[in-house]
Length: 247
Image (cartoon, rainbow, N blue to C red; front, side, top):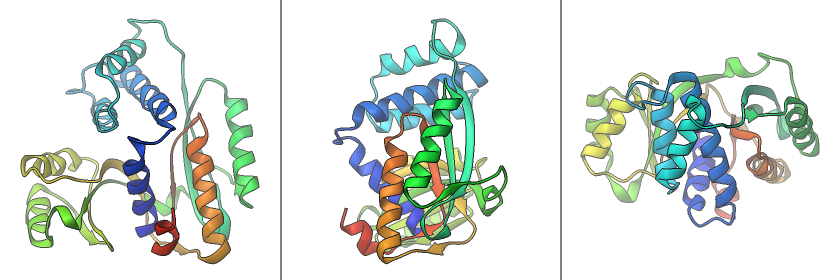
């Protein structure tokens, strides 16, 4: 699980100062718009919107921008209709990849995604080819410098967490999607800072990649991040810490 969570944490840390902040904002706005369209504009009654707004807040998306996105989703303002598409495939070293997209042009998006896969030596597969390898879970990653194992264990498990995984520099709290908000609220109430908090797809098993394949995997993930239509992606790549540390 380390490869997946470490990449997500690195992206989160880089986000605020990254030159790609505009691209990050665009993806957040898309997600807020779609969440509001599908479940309504009240975050208290719409978990997906609530999570989208939480992510937007962590990246300092202006509140008025978020509100406009909600109104576009609910139809109070004119906006673009986005379609959700999930692509599955294989990356460098045969690792499993899930790619979530929001697009207003399906043909453009699949061409872009196929190009990114192909350039990395991978390929887009058929529906269902790798989705079965992942479980939908809540993930809250707390840096070890911000808390200790006993505190995290007691707080998270009492609030309903399924597991706490000790990584090299963090404690990763795993929850069911249904218990995610309760566990996150408990961590917030204890004023413990976390590096990452999201509903995600966690691989059941990892595929180790190192050397050239690990470097290819990093470039592949960077290319997916750079795609305007790709919202999120998940992999079961187990990449050595030293490769991440070189970023």
